Length: 366
Image 1 (cartoon, helix red, strand yellow):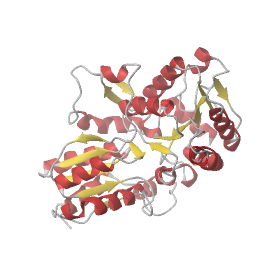
Image 2 (cartoon, one colour):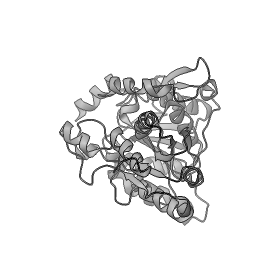
Image 3 (cartoon, helix red, strand yellow):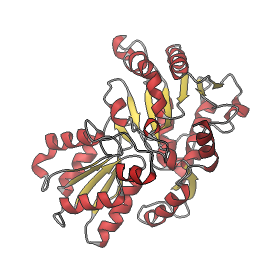
Image 4 (cartoon, one colour):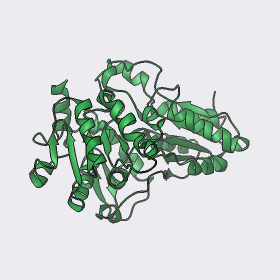
């Protein structure tokens, strides 16, 4: 396992080149300033942490291999050399232990950024995340804030089996007291991580390993050290009038590619990048559905009790009379993630699944 993680850290992900190819058709559909620079998600995360550590001496990083090895995925590259071992802590392989230390440090007024090598390993620390961090502000009648960020790769990677490929967005988003963010682009990663570090409450920051090496256009505004994105606000990545597609993280790229294919058949799809899972931008979602009258929801996670289910409930409660077709839900298969590559692909949403669902919602096919 360690060898696999280290190799992935070096080459930036097994599917980085293939993902780069799929992006080429999508960039033209998005509006960026002329001559915009490009930045990888990895560099966006690294720069966000670096700038926040520079601006606030209370911010520090801790986790397995974040220091001398510079991070299993090189997100913390250069930070040990710049800030020293007092602010970049290499921890033993004990998630419960170092997460508990991080929460205690946040109680004392520091601002820890805790890295999990994968969010699957956060299960070892879930008691501290939920019982020690999420509930403290409420149970202390507002007297205790816990300014801590729990970050790391979430969801499916490539060929790492059921114990390393689960999406925890719905798990953590169901907990009052937590904020849950899931970036897609470099701009998302920079702006949302800065917001998370500055926030007085605990934030679960769900990245995607296969996006780390992916390059995205980024504006001059987003490169400014003061740049910050609002928590709880979705982004309309592509405007449309026939069907709304909501999704987050890596699936945003899939949804944009599906929208391109749908456009070839005369279907105008609006793609919403949720960015924030909790709080959820219900207003943007419902406004879009009221415009398009159709909804397709997409996520990698399990279908039961998922993020898609919550979005469906919100739309039924607030915009049911605007719907012209049943809501279409696209999610991962209701099975632990297979190891074999062919079965793994069948267990995850694909572009063609989104296209078929949108066409069904528009009554273009069965």
